[in-house]
Image (cartoon, rainbow, N blue to C red; front, side, top):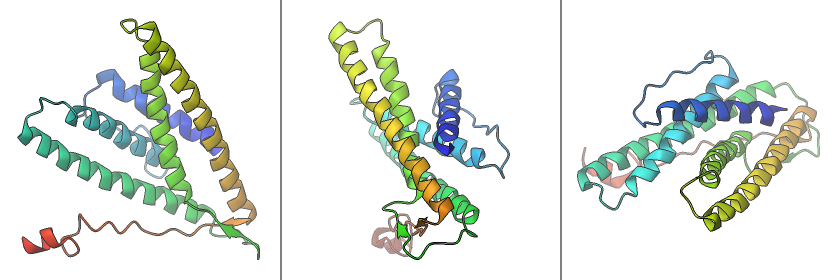
Length: 200
């Protein structure tokens, strides 16, 4: 199943990141560029770095100049994340382009890649909630609450994984069809953001 494959790639990326556990560490993708695993690994690495950006920027004592610099990094990371989602959707569009779509086929509320995006974020939530549940310096109450939350996250991953595999199965049989809309984010575009346009 594709979801099992994706979850394994996400766990590999998260584990690799935490060997160094620094947002500015060098990135190396172990998969060839023409492999969907390459996109999945890169996607999760972006999510993992951004997860830690979000931790850092919430430091109440952060220097305002450093915070602004970090905000720019988060903005750039968000754009990279969106780009990777669109690349992953392009992979699925190409994969299913020759499938004969049934007359009563329906469209899904979201594309496969945006569901996979949520799966990647879930992998991060599970990793860090597991860390909290395993803490030796926390109270028993904290550990129990985190374990309960972890159980819910694991259930979410099972459900989302099943839904993704069912969606891909529907594409393969022509019961559903893909239609992808580009995000068309306006705030990074010098022509569409009036603040940026005014600086030209």
